[in-house]
Image: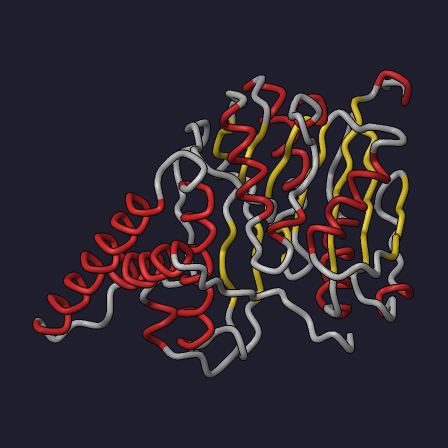
Length: 307
């Protein structure tokens, strides 16, 4: 058997905020993960000022740490996890969200072994939506909450932290190996981090065999929330594009995308068909891009001052 000192190490980082039932479900799933040959830690950062997740327990990894980060925003929570892990850096850090659940017991080992076999800097796996009863059939069948999927081993030009494994050594190559606080209220700090990784020529590959399920509550599985979320994603896209292009150019890109989406939706409606996800995505991301160019930003994660 491989000695512990010879094992490679992995750390699973989870940021959580007032989703204690979901967190317990995730931790239960993580406890069943196969990780032969790997030393695994789980670090959970509770971003609730009241520390409501304090009672969460876990016994499925070599170690488990529950931290409290009262400063508001997922960026503060993510950076607290990185600060904790820096004391004993893992070979690989794995990010998963508190409202997700790995869909098999070999999810973790699949991510880790894929990275080793491909010798890449990061791998990203699928995130599949799960809906509560009563959700609009058009939303479910139209694929509005589904994300792009690819063949395993395919290079990916973007990145998030909801089902991702990343080499610690790659992260440390960045000038600022942490999440940008400027994206705390708007979201998108993970996209910004991967934007910098791509600029540093990190190799990021798709791993189709390591899916997780994302549970959408009833208040999110609705058209208004989806429109707001899609505009926010457009905001984030524009913020990153503005680093390389003029405001006029980015606004024109956003306007063009919004017009294209509107035309796709109109064509579908004229044929008596439902709103297509592609047209919806183009329209509202385009609107979000234009809005960002004029200083109008969706602050999805802004919290009341009293919190």
